[in-house]
Length: 158
Image 1 (cartoon, rainbow, N blue to C red):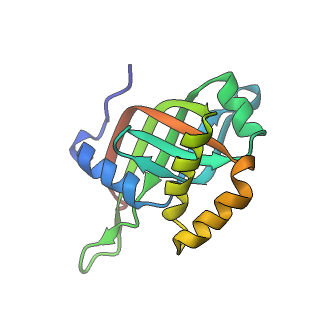
Image 2 (cartoon, helix red, strand yellow):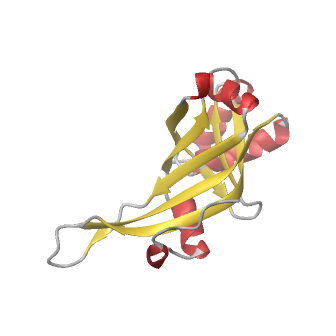
């Protein structure tokens, strides 16, 4: 159903893909938007290795919600900061591309739990996370990407 990676010699393991999903803080989320045009936005995210889902939050209305409601097939991409080999100018970056199905999470308890874990990845203290949840959780829409296919690739920019 999904294409095999053309540059398979640059493929990285599933474990490396999961490490990047766990460690990195930002990625791009793509849906089929209005009039069939792609719609891609940068997002903060949380990867849950136990249930193999990517979680992120947003508003309860808008382009993202409409697009997912119309077609739940999505793509998510993230990448690490990379490295340079000594004496070389080019960067070596590992990227991860995920294809899956997105859904809106309506369960209040699950929303609070996953948003808490997401926030702990970004906020400096638990107290700040709890304060934000107390004031804003009712306005938050939690989204989940059920990962169907994932590839990772080490790219040398030369």
